[in-house]
Image (tube, rainbow, N blue to C red; front, side, top):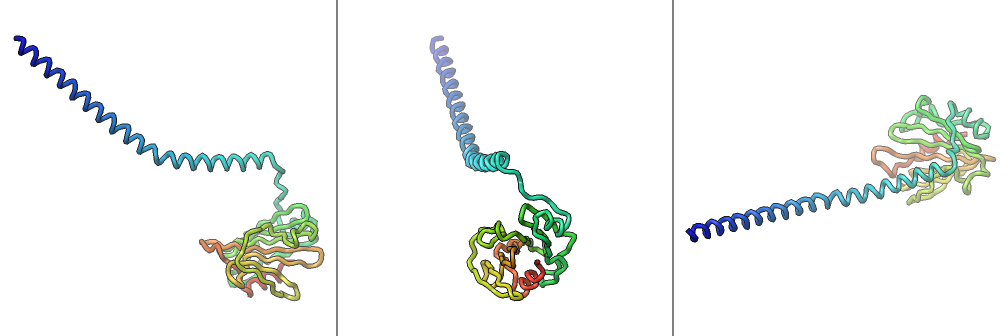
Length: 211
């Protein structure tokens, strides 16, 4: 009888031990899986937090900083009047190898001393500005301070223009002065062509139309 009872106890203890091992193995696997799953999101969450932090900082600076000085205008002349630059002629309607700048796509804006026209041509974004010379940064009213691989000057209708581009003789940024006014022309390529620039022929056509 004692042997039977002893056998039952041993069997019970063995079953209990096996159950504990099984439970321990399962828990270990679960923790390992959880740790593995949380490792990837941890990096993503960290990056997301940094991005959100930067966005929050920019937002705070925008809210705490000065008000946007730009105002919208319905036409080039309204932009010129608002900026106080007399008149503003843009390349709208000018035909180039890119096509024709369509008036219906043009957007005008101004701030004190500076008028701007933004208009897409094909896959190129054009930004044209006319500003008072006394607000220019060393003759530059473009607001673009990127570095470019090439810089050169050329003469267009008796006016010396300075050009910048990542491809020689293809102008992404162009500036010039005429009397009391400074001008700029930015041609930003789309479709993945970050080094786009205007050909000498297209540049001459656009610059000649900007007054």
